[in-house]
Every structure is written in C-alpha cells, then in structure tokens.
Image 1 (cartoon, rainbow, N blue to C red):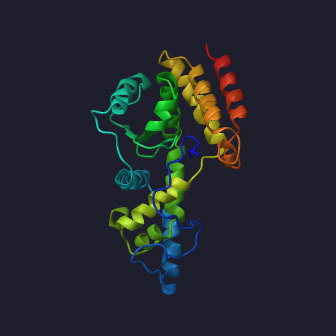
Image 2 (spheres, one colour):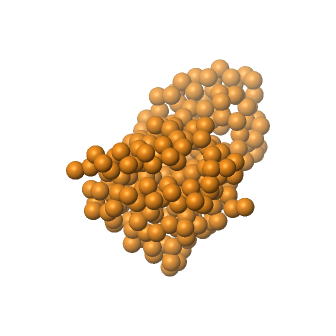
Length: 262
C-alpha cells in the first residue's frame, strides 16, 4: 500500500533520534556526549530558547540543503517542475523569500520550512488538479507567514542535543557535521503542527486563493483528495489525528472561512 502523509510533514530520510532534552548523541556518527558536558549543554539549551530569527532561519536552510541531498529533485526540464513554475506566480508569494521545488517520490506530501523552502511531491501533483496543488502551496506558505514553521525549527534547535553540544562550545549551526544536520532535518521531519496551526494555515490558504482570484473551494477539494486516497484507517490520515484536526473538522473550518469572504 502506498504511504500517505498529511500535508506539511516532510518524509523521514535520516535516522531519527529522540528529541526531548536528553543529553546523548549516541545516534551521531563519530559523536560522543560526555557526562561532564551536561552543564554546558544545559546552558546551551537556555541559549537556544532565545535564538535570533537569523539563526533559526539559517538552520532551516542548512537542514533544507541536507534534505535536498536525501531526495531526488525534479530537474527544471521535467513536466513537474514546469507545472510548478506555472503555479508559483499565481500564489502571489515573494519569490525572493520562497524557494519552490518538486521532489520525485511516490509519497503524497508537501512541506515548508522557516527559510521559505517549499517542497511538493510528484505523487501529490499526480493526484491533484492545478487548483488543488495551488491550494496546497498556499497552505504551506501559510505555515511560513504565520510563523508555524519558524516555531517548529526553533523547537528542534532547542531540543536537539547535537545543536546544544555545538552551542555549548561557542559554535554555530554551520559547524554541525553532515550526520548531525541529517538528524536536525529528521527531527524537523518528525515535527507535527498543532491542530490550531493546521486550521489557521487552511484559513490562510482559503483567503489567499480568494485574494489572488483563485477558487477558494480548492483547499476543500485538496483535503477531500487526501481523504479519497488515504482514507481514515491506520495507514491513512487517521494515523495523525493525535496532532492534527480530522479531515471533517478541516472541511468545516474551510466552509466557514469561505462563507465569511466578501
């Protein structure tokens, strides 16, 4: 059975580590976190809690680059890339801020990161019309504009032991090894937006579609497409209901937003 994922959850491509404030680096290649570093890492965690926007965004860019190495990017000559290029201007997004690409994959997914990275998967584009893909793009842009993606990356930096160890030594994200960057990317990949974040991003998408002259109902159609493909069983959307609103709740929210448009 084909794996179906909710929007905004990048796929797991690197080995995951547990990300509570546990001061271990056993999953890091060539890394060993010694007990005497605990006090330093604790101080680094406090430092991470007050990270500047610049550091968080730079970390997102580093993680995005690492994810790009772990996935096959559609070449500019491909029909997927050409189709995406046609849709990007219709979003009204600032192209200096956002970076859109397609990953060639059988997974149904799309995600955005704090630095404006937006990735859409080819299988999702296979299943959806242009209007629906555009709605997905607006949904992901919403996560960035509403700073949901920023909060997710900031949380990963706060709870990632590899980052804490580097910060404790006075280093920067750029000093992380490829393995550690992979773990940071995987930690972001495992992050889930809250139910309120997902609903807010749906609302953002509906309003953005309306503002740019596109059918706002496309966001509802995109959710319904996910329902029809993934169902609500253990292998489908229901697997994520602990941290995401049900599809019916999302559709209800979308309908309410559409009615409020003037």
